[in-house]
Image (cartoon, rainbow, N blue to C red; front, side):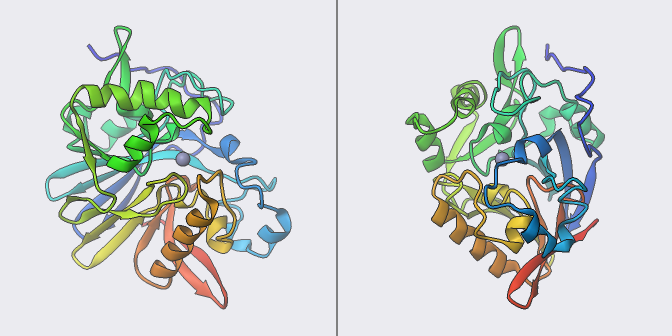
Length: 305
Ligand SMILES: [Zn+2]
């Protein structure tokens, strides 16, 4: 039996509604897990109010009235051609995490929100990871009778082979929560035989593929959706916040800061002034928009669809 928590969520849980975008024949849903505003404070050391005032489009959706970065932990559900794919399923419930206040032993209604999108855990065909940080792999497993069991038992979990090997090597310069997540969220699905170790440009299914965007972690990837002449990109943590579109040199706890910046600049320039929808993995509502060039800078023109 699966123990699905239905406990009340923290009162600062932010925007939790299901959001939906259509990308050609693909339907994409935002499945919220937990508010990330607390986690974002201090994450981008170069963030400053003077620079934010020069990018007024950031307020109030992405920077609140108190000058704080707003953000989310959220997964994205892609339904395309009979395939159901979930990207970066959150922090997870009941995990011991100490890095972010309020994220230890969470009890969110993530699976209830998945059901609201019409999908049961057993209906997921592919779980895709942009990287293996603890806020992207948590719902891989749930605690069942004292052991961590796969949440999506009929899915293939697609992980960059090189990213997996990096975390398998137990890098010492990482916070404890990352090691804990590899142990309680990634290894159990690997041991259950559900992981496919893939290349960084892997094709998940026709219309959904990985785009290498290394730097935040050694083999970080973003996810491209292309269908019937329309396209979208799910960023992962190549950028944590839209302020990094205005200021791509603003890093955020990146493994390789210069490589992360290069990946960010490449992504911004590649999609600027195109119709490609940018879906920000940690962006606050409305979460998605298109990158527009304004002289020598860029901004996100937010959209609800
Ligand atoms: Zn993250």
